[in-house]
Length: 127
Length: 173
Image (cartoon, each protein chain N blue to C red):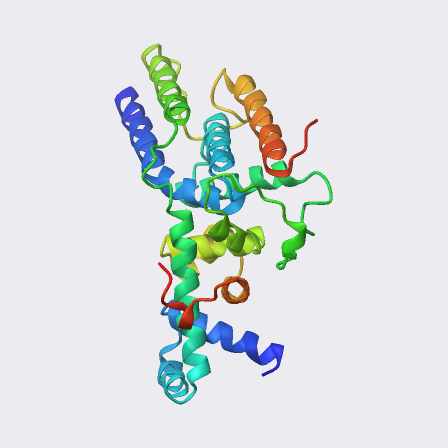
C-alpha cells in the first residue's frame, strides 16, 4: 500500500473510531473491515494508541490542581468582591480599553516569568 | 446590580474551576511534562484574570486559545520551535523533558507535533466531537481529521517500533 492510500485509510479509520463517518459510508467500511484483516488490525491499533495516550494524559488526574492556581483565583474573586462592595464595579468580563484589575502589571510580570521558566525547563535554555 | 455582578463573578470562577482539570490535561498534552503543564496552567489562569473575558467569549475555547498562545510564546525562541504550520515535527527535533517516570508513553506522545497532541487530547481524551475540537482549536474540521489520523499513525509506528511490540496491540495494559 502506498503512503497516500495509507493516509486515506487512516483518515477513514479515525472517523470510524470516533463515530464521525457519514452514515452513507458506515456500511462500506464495515464490509472492508470484514474482508481486510490488516485494516481491522489497524483500527484495533488506533484504539490501543488512543488508550495509551489517554492513560498518559490522565495519569495525574488524581493529583490536585496546585494550590497556587486556586489561590490566584480566590484572590481575584476577593479583590473584585471588595471592588463591588466599595462601588467600584469591575467585572471579570473585559471592559473597553483592556485589563480588569490593578494588579495586572504584577500578573503580566508573573506570566513573563512563567513563560521564561517554561522555556528553561522544557528546552533546557538557561538565560 | 452589585449582587448580580457578584453572582456573575462567583459563577465565572466556578466555571473556571470546573474546566481546570481538562485544561490541565490539555496543557500536559502540549508540554509533555507535568511540572511544565502546571506552570502553563498557572500562566493561563493569570492571563485570563489579567485580561478578563471578552463579552462574547465562551470560557473553554477562550482558555484553550490563551493556553496555546502562551505555549507558543514559551517555545518561540530558537530552532527547537517547529516550523509554523508544520504538522509533522520529526521526533529527533523534539526535546520535551520527561520527568515523571512514564518515559515510554511520554516518548510516544513526544513524536507528535503540538497540534497533533492538542487534537488527540481533545478528541481521544476529552471525548469532544471533531466539530467541537475544530471550534476549540479554531481550525477547519478537515485539519482535525488529518491531524488525528497522522497522530494515530505516528503513535502506531512508534509503538510498533518498540523493543516489545504488543501482539495485536491488545496485550499491554
